[in-house]
Amino acid sequence: MKRVFLLFKERMDKIVLLLNYLLMKLLLLSSILIVLDLMEVMVEGLKVRSQQYISLCNGQMKIHQKALINFLN
Image (tube, rainbow, N blue to C red; front, side):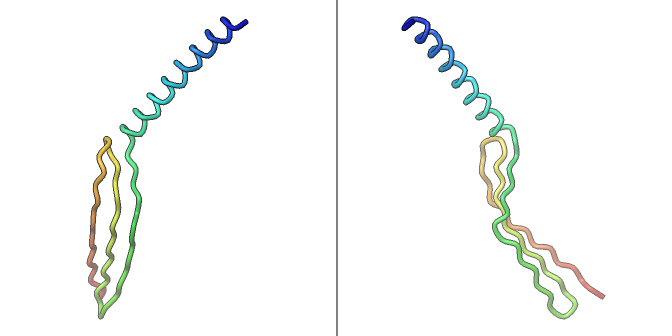
């Protein structure tokens, strides 16, 4: 009985390691976008939109800032 349990445990350990490996591969291959700050301001016909976000892609983290200016007539 103990031998059967040890074989079962060994097989389960391999399955858990495989699942962890697949999860890490999925996280490295997928892109994740987290918006930190979104602000919109209107001043005398100008509309300014500012955005900060973090992107996680291919295991690298980057911080981005973006500003859009629209002229309203």
